[in-house]
Structures are given as C-alpha cells and as structure tokens.
Length: 323
Image 1 (tube, rainbow, N blue to C red):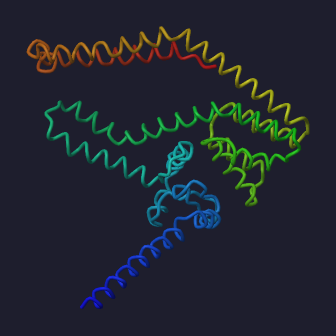
Image 2 (image 1 turned 120 degrees about the horizontal axis):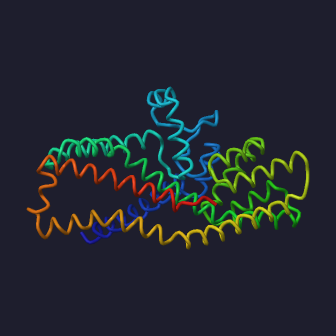
Image 3 (image 1 turned 90 degrees about the vertical axis):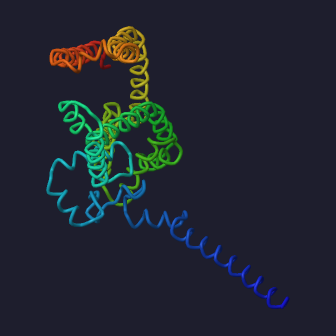
C-alpha cells in the first residue's frame, strides 16, 4: 500500500511539473519576446499591439469581422474616428469605439426611467451619453500630444547631435525610437519601420505628421524634406527648430502666468452658481425647489444655464492666447 501511494505521489508530482512546463512553453511561444517580434514582422506595421491591425494594402482595420469592416469602409466619416484613435495612441478599433458609444447610450436608456428627471434633461442625457467615449478619446489625445510636444525639442537636439556624429537620418530615427522615452519614441520607431519595409521616406514623414498633428513637428518634417531636395546643413536646421520650440514654450509659460487671474475668474464664475444651488438644496430644499417645480422657475434655469455657458465660452476665448 505504501508503495502504491509513493508511486502515485511521484507520478502526480511529475504530472504537475510537466503541466507547469507545458504552460510556460505555450506562454513563451505565443506571448514571449520572440513571438512578439514574429507577429510584428507578419503584421507589417502593428508595432503597438492588436489595435494597429493592418491589411496587406497598409490599411488599418476597422473591425475584426469582415462584414462590419465592409460596412464601416462604406462610410467616409469613419476615417476621422480612425485618425482620432491613431493620434490618441490607444489600442481600440473603430468598431470598439462605436460599441462603447452604444453601450453608454444603452446604460443611459436603462437608468433614466428609474430617475424622475424632466423630459428635456433626459433627452440631453441621451444625446450626450454616446459622446462620452469620444470625449474621453479627445482628452487622451490632447494629453498624449502635449507630452509629445514637450519631448520634441529634446528629440530635435538628439537628431542634430547624431547627424553631426555622421549617422544617416534613417539610422538616427531608429536611435530616437530606441533611446527616447515614450510616446515620441514609438512614433519615430513606427516611421523607421515604415521606411525599413519599403515606404518612401517622404511618405513615412508625412504619415508621422499625420499621426502627430503638431505645428512644431510639421516644421521638422518640412525641414527634412526640403533638405533632401535642395541640400543644406540639416543638423543646424534641427538645432534652430529646437531653440525655436523652447523659446515658444517659454513665451507660453509667461502667457499662462499673465492669464492665470482670468482663468481663475472663469472657474469661480462657472462653479459658483452650481455650488450655491447645491448648498441651498441641502439647507432649504423647499425654498429653491420652486425653480424646477414652477414653469417660470424652469424657464429661468434654462436662461441662467445658457447665459452661464455663453459667458464661460467668452471668457475662455479671451484668456486663450495661441502662441
């Protein structure tokens, strides 16, 4: 009996070890570094994961399902959503973004009947709910572009120093993709891989400017393209662009300091009515309840909301100075 138990224990131990080893081999074969490199080569330009699926025609996939892909391709405006996803650097596809919008709309339709809200407010919520994923995407895009804009002067200096050291521009793009921090490194690495796979440099640089719609980057791309056509000292041009970007950042900082009082006034004037209303609801709900129970009060609320929104937009346009 002891011999049978010992044999069973040994076989069970061996089975567990083999199972763990098999799971490790499967994981390393499908998700390891070598597998990722092979997948990147096979997918041609899917350097940032599954969200960058492309066909053999260098077209980004809108959906995994071919029928939905054909349907989305028939709508021209879908390309704008795809460009927004590309600029935001997220791994979503257009189909996933539209699915998230439909899910938000469905959640709003399910929750609104449980809440006793006016019809106008319910309609406004139903119209705004599908836009939440798009607004979130715009926020992610703005944060990513701002980070790239901050990294751009260092990238221009890196390009200039490497060119002075005797490297070619293509190799310098690879070096930026390997040594600079994200997200600017990923964009230059993507452009280098396009050139490496046979895309002309001018087209790869235009695609880079399309993925990063920043004026400073367009200056850099135009400088490189003009230098390739007419010649010149590209390293010196890139150094001048870097100095110009840093000087603009300094001027923007001064403008933000001078307009800080206006921004604070806009925040106070925009939030103060809402804050006072919430306090009055907590302290004396019968007194302020007339605003949404009486038709005249509801009309006054609409007038106040529109006036507050217009005033906030006007103050924003006054204090927002483009440099």
